[in-house]
Length: 213
Figure (spheres, rainbow, N blue to C red):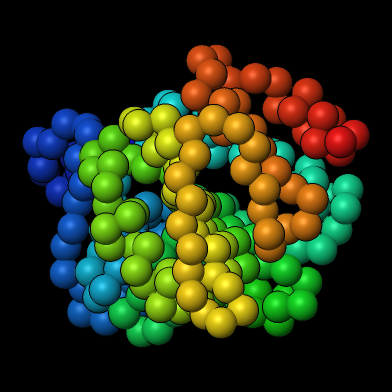
């Protein structure tokens, strides 16, 4: 957030969060020439930026620790965070809050970006435009064939899970409570109720419960 406000100050824009910034870009290379911490994503040929609230950052850290801890213990994949682009084509390099790449697709992981779709994508809705991920990013993730997509909405205390069948058809499930199982990361699950607690529950306590279940 502090970095984003400094950028706005340099641009001499009097904008207070929550907000969503969208600006044109000359091409893909201009995006990749930006500082990796600039906070922009390349979405449909545009640069898009939205701030992260304290709640967003708490949920990101919570889920990142759970996923990294699970995969460190059980193996099978790699986790990347929100400053690592997932390049789908010259107009689309979104930066999901979290993504998992299974070992079978490890060749997609590059030094600067992921070349092609991840196996699991997790997005946490921003306060600037809570419906943005579902409206603009979800259709592109599905078109790219991402096998599993979680859209977490703290604003409505709900999780939308889209999973791709062997026939290439997506099924959608919405949960506000109960267990959510990943089909891409075998054995990994969360309790939706964890996400709405304030403060969030102990990350290591939740991870321990997962590993012992």
